[in-house]
Image 1 (cartoon, rainbow, N blue to C red):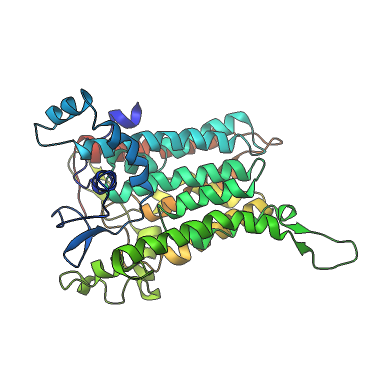
Image 2: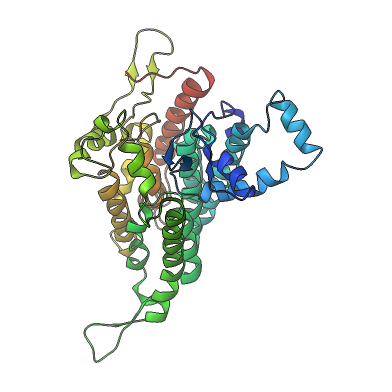
Length: 399
């Protein structure tokens, strides 16, 4: 309800809803590129460049919208110009973003922390981080973050529970086909629970591997990698993610990305946004504005500082390894997120960061205290203010 009430409405970047409509019609492309969409043009057709998980989640919504009397009502809502795909995409983003918050509560409830800490942790993720803002927008880039969080939280729920490898692999595959850098961070699931995939022997220094467990974990990931290669081959005649290259190699775009799609030379820009970017301060109302070019992660959510207080054990090591693996690739990307609140690429590892924060604030021996709740409330206030300025007042400034 809060996400819906604070959403600015239909997104103009309705790529996933449009792609879902194309899939239902039996195609993979459009005859020409709509001017408002980020698409790759190849052999006279326009193809979607982003991974398709969000579009697959849109399929049942777009399919149901084809039936009367719902179809006629939706077309009328759009002013007679077809289905309101932008509104539908934003609605699904809001719904999935809200589900992510519920999944966060389930995952945190499986940690060795108090029930109060699990509740506050879910509130921190849902309202004290930039997840709130991005889930309410529903644009093509932000919607992918919401679906990625869906896969990550489901994976953590299983990881903290029975740790069935097939389910963990499947949930990671969902996250991967939303945000492809996830594939690099997969080893984090192995670090915290070596008893699942190793077989210690009393007379051997090095334990033997449980190959069946490892193969079962890898099977969904290998399957989605193969599917992604097939998806690219059908569209472009190559298994490479060529769509991204075609986007950044356009003459009007190429000068912005002189080192290609990925390069270590892009690190300074990411480091600046991640650590050093500040909000905009002005002498007139509303005085403090979030810069849509980016704001440092510790400013948008100061509670994240408690991640460094997490106990030194395998679970903490696993979370930090996952975060660092994500960052090692994200910091090489040719862009720093363009328009956003905070540093949106960090949303890829926010579930791991939330786990660290709540373990740093709470344990069953030392439950969460009032000052911990206070910094969570400060984080919620910062993000509520940002959502109000950006979504309600519609004030967007880069500097």
